[in-house]
Image 1 (cartoon, helix red, strand yellow):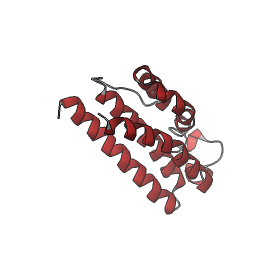
Image 2: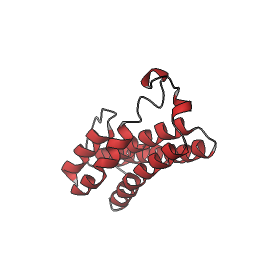
Image 3: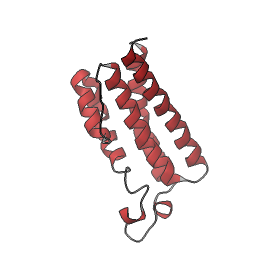
Length: 135
């Protein structure tokens, strides 16, 4: 396995693990953590694709920006841009009380929030999984 394939596998595996952790946190009522982990999972999955395509340093946390970069290699990523927009909105307010007016993340995010975040993550995971299995 070349270095890029190895690096892609590392990022992919952690992205899958973050998704499992999101599911666990959702099941246990930690919806803000589940939402954040969905964003993190998507970020890592997109970075896995970029590493597999030969990128050397993949920097940034915006899943939308990463997906737009992925789309330069594979047009199918256009289909997940709206999901990435939703997930990017979870990066800060799921973690910091000052990201929300008069609420903590734990008070603000609920089961619907975490289900929607997982729903936005699913097409990204499916697409990256499909592409990387062929590589």
